[in-house]
Image (cartoon, rainbow, N blue to C red):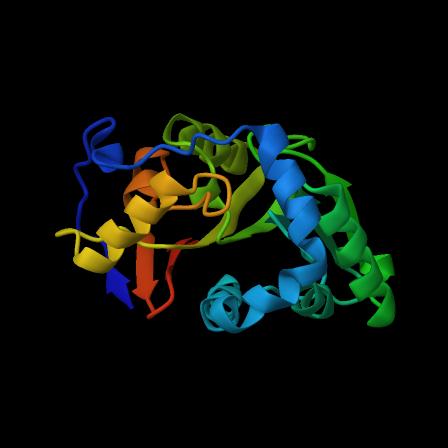
Length: 229
């Protein structure tokens, strides 16, 4: 595990050079509704970094856990099993169709009674302050345009209980920026709806948002950032 050593982050420095997300919320919702039946295609690419992130989150029985951008429920099964019958998992997603598929997946696993699903936007989380012991995002934060990322992280801080944890699994934009990242960003600019995500420096964004103890672990597919207790 690598500790990010950039302790003195000036306001906005983490966002330098980031490419914008130009598609609208309505366009994103339509796109993910269409993709919901094919969400299994993403599993081979997301499974390993997501599993690393879930391991770092270290959910315990009886906890209340929030997943932002839960999609078709790839992580919800493991989270629901981890919290046990005395805990609760909440899954939020912008796409009603993704929520529908996640609900069906949970019913098949006989875990639907442990999970609450809502259609909602992570930039305005519909829960009270200090509602959750742990929060999880996997390939979700980079879907927001740069000015919205601090809003999402501020909401995460608001609903996280004192001493709680946040894990973010994201496409990493490391420095210096290599050619694979630049190619990805060019494709994102060319096809802003089909390829609406882009690499971000998640660790620096978390630091600027006020999370302390930010640490990162890199994989070939992505990067997990966490706030320690």
